[in-house]
Image (cartoon, rainbow, N blue to C red; front, side):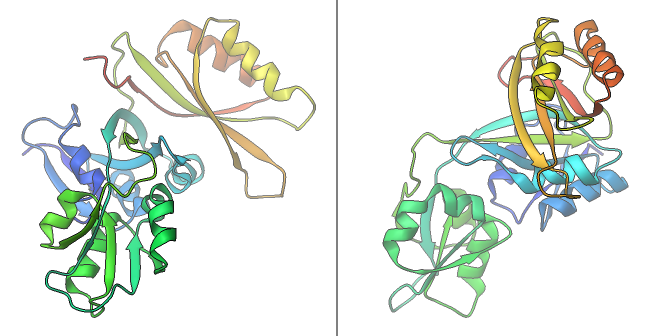
Amino acid sequence: MGARVAYLGPEGTFAHQATVLVRGAGPDAVTAPYPTVVSVLEAVEDGAADLGVVPFENSVEGQVNLTVDVLVHDSERIQVCEEVVLDVTFGAYRQAGAAGPPTSVASHPVGLAQCRRWVHDSGLRIRETSSTAEACRLAAEGDDPGLVAVAAPEAAARWGLDTVAVGVEDFPGAQTRFVVVGREAAAPTGHDRTMFVLTPPDDRAGVLLAALEQLSGRGLNLSAIASRPLRARLGEYCFVLVVDAHLAEAPVAGAFAALRDDGFTVKVLGAYPQWGTGS
């Protein structure tokens, strides 16, 4: 039996599409849908799944805060071990043969955000769902024939929906980055990234600059940085960073040791091959 791969379901979501691109899963992988990002990550944390695929970032709205926050604050044993980048497009769909005018539009909050102009212009009541494919399920099986789902064409086809409009995204050519989580980091390939959380010892002026100098001084390229609240008090933050090198490489290990010596807390979220490197 191949790897057990959990993904944000139901079938037809962009995460489901991303599972076929997971190189670490192997040809005999068994995929299983989970209803929320949290449940996917918990399945890997608890050992019910070997790998999990969840959205992490899109080219329009930036990072998916729910995924980031669970990795930062709640996960203990899981590590990001791969990334998958997927081209995304959205359409609007409703129940096959439905009569009467549309009444509401449903999708995942990130999907709604990427189709903000079309959603606004439709004038329909907005309904958020746990995934884009769940919106399709509600449109197909729900008791509101006026519900319009904003989702991928593949998801709409799975539920036999009629097309209202195609290409409703604000920015054609958008992409979503998914992270694949397991219980250990990937081995070095020579074209890798390391994701980690950096919590400063205090909020003195220049504290972040001092941390970044530890990275740049060792020749480490920083490909992403974002702040997230620490949840304890307003105005206190940690930072999620990605450097273009593997955790096992000396510059990364040296930077982490120096940061800890300076009082920073460093939590490694994973090391993984860069997408598109062929490794």
